[in-house]
Image (tube, rainbow, N blue to C red; front, side, top):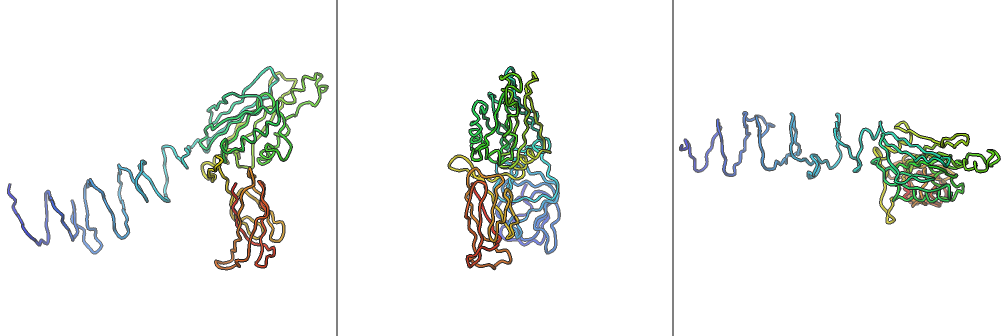
Amino acid sequence: NAEKLQVKGSAAIDSLSVSKTLTVTKTSTLTGNVGIGVAPATGDNAEKLQVKGSAAIAGDLSITGASNKLTVAGTSTLTGKIGIGGEPSTEQLKVSGDAAITGNLSITGQVYIDNHSQTEASVDSFKIFVSASGNSGTRTSPPIVRINNHRINFTLPRRGLNTIILNSDKVKKTEHHQDVYDNPANWNTWADWINNHVNATYGDLVIIASMDAVRNAPSESTSSANKLLKSINSTQAFRLERGPTSGSELGRPSDLIFKYRTAYILIFVKGQNKCHEVATQHKPSSSRAAEVSVSLDYNSDIVREFIRKNLYAPIITHPTSEGGSLRLVRGTVRENGEIRLGKDFSVVKEGEGKYIINFTPAFLHAPTVVVTQHYRKDGWGGDTKDNCVVTFTSENEAHVICGNSSGNKTDRSFEFIAVG
């Protein structure tokens, strides 16, 4: 079994052909082109290594060429974990950075955006069903809430307003009950609870279904309930007492109770300036309770806003020391008052250099507003003495004055950020 050839020292061989196994036990440098299972490539730009057949690499494969590119021309199976733009993680593939996909992306599992699961049912087939009742006193019908035919139960439904909060995963977050019949001031307690970001944050779906009896929401413009309901453009909450105004109209003073037996439903996305509401009053001549129901799907503005906010455009929030979160509105406004960039606000031009920014919906409290002039004609124009200042802020609006280098009010384009 002795070797046919043994070499001690250097050997110059123009061409070496090995028909069977070649074992290299020490460090070797191959300066030419190498072919494994195939003849080496030739030419100035030929590959240094060509492999025809399978290759098993037990260690690392490092690519340090001028372009640092790995090109896979055929079908490949990668059984380990891959990191692109960073180290691999627990996922089979982790991409740190942007990804551009020119073909189709097929996903058979769950999709998560910002750690929130999204499914096909979240979009086109997402449905809400809500029922409420106003009773005659002999019958109590609890409210019903179903999401995609799955019933979401109230722990203990009560007379008045029964509220459920759904988070971005379409899961019940919390619930609340206020008897606004026994004490109409509880409307404000209800609104304060909604306004607390610990209970409901921007983008959450708020569902209210009444039971038994309710009274009108407060008409005082300074009350928290009035501000909240006005911000979502609610109207029916202020006229729920639709029954007779005197016992003589019915023949029996006791029948006045029917005035408050209204079935009421209110649905809105917190942070939006719209709602869906319905109300039906109990009729004294009927032995049945007043009942009303609502079915909403993706064709509804409310459902569409809820899906879009949580799937396509999550609202920017930041935790605060009070345990809530901050809302951010930003915008770019042209000198004529037209909105160039941004949303959730409108602009009224009050006069030369004077602008009113209206927040829709309103903030819960007066936000912090910063503003700066934007000279848009070229990259280095303008005068550093030109300026913009904020002269007034409230939860509904901010006043901005722009001026020239002489301090006179002058129309100017500007940008702002409001946080609150």
